[in-house]
Length: 386
Image 1 (cartoon, rainbow, N blue to C red):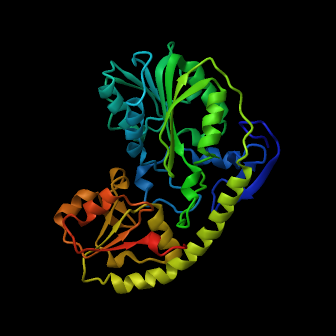
Image 2 (spheres, rainbow, N blue to C red):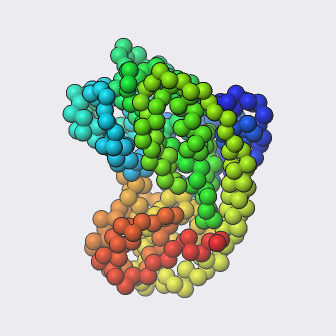
Image 3 (cartoon, rainbow, N blue to C red):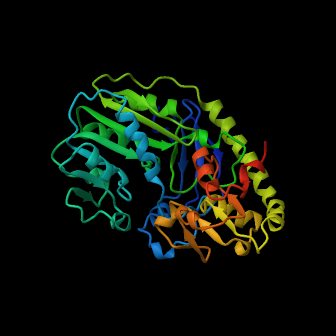
C-alpha cells in the first residue's frame, strides 16, 4: 500500500469502520499523515450501481452508507463568497462542475457569470431530472477522464467529490490539464476536524468516502501540482479552497500530521462507543419528556436519527412529524412516516423538538422558536460525552 500524495509505503491500519459493505479499512501515512481507505474492489464496484430512489428509507448511521446523495446545495454559497474576495485575471466563460448532483451550483453559476452554457459531469440520471432539459447545461454521463471537450475551462468546480475517488492525484492532474492559463479551481471536501469533538454517534468513515483530508495536507498537495492558493473558507465540517492555475510547482512539503491524526481518530473511536451506549438511557428519558398527547417533532432526520433508532432503540410513535430540509427533496417518507421540510413549522404549534443537528446555528434556533417561543428543545449534543 502506498500513500497517494507523498508515495511513501510506510502506512498503518488505524481503524475498521462499523458494518462496512466493502470491507473498508482506514489507513494513515506515517510520512505525511494522509488518511485513506482500502477496500474490496469487487464489493466497491457493486456498491456503485446507480441507485433506485424508491428503495430509499433512511440514511444509515454506519459505514454501509445510503446510496442517496443529498446536501451539496448548502456548500454553494461558500464558492460565491470566495469568488467575491479575489481579483479575476480572466473572464469566466467556460465552466465545468465535476459532480453536478442536483444542479444547485450549475444553475447559480449560469446566472452569476452570465454564461452561455455550463458543462457538468454527473453519472446518476436520477440526480439530474430537474435540470437535464435545460438547454444551457451540458451533462456528461460517463467517467470524468473520458470527457472529450476540445477546450479548456476558466473555472472547474469540485464540491464533495474528490473524497470519493480511489486516486485523487489522477483527478487533480486531470483538472490541472483541463484548466486554461490562470484558470480557477475551487474545491470543497469534508474536513477531518468534523470528528474533533465528543458528540460522534454516526460513522464518519463510511463506504462512499475513500480519502479524508486535513486542510494543510490537501492545500499543500494541490499547490505542489502547480496551483496558487487564492482564498480559503474552512469550517470544522468542510474545507473550501480556491486556487489559480500556475506554472509554479513548489513540491510537496514534508508534513507532520501523523501523530495529530492518530490522536484524532483514536479519540473518535473511543467517544463514538461511549455515546452510542448512552442513547438507550436517553431514549427512556424522551418517553417522559415527549408524551403522545403533545405535538412532538424530530428536526434533522438523517444519520443521527438512524443512530438513535439503531443504538438507542428510539420509538418514533411519540413523534408527529419528521423534518429535514435536504432529505425531503429526495423522499416523502422515512421509517414509514411522512417527511416534511421546515416550511411546515409555520402551521404548527409545537410542544417538543428533538434536535438532531450536530452544530445548530443561531439562525436555525431562531426559526424553530419564531412561532413557538415556549417550545422545549432537546439538544442531542448536551447528552453526550464532555
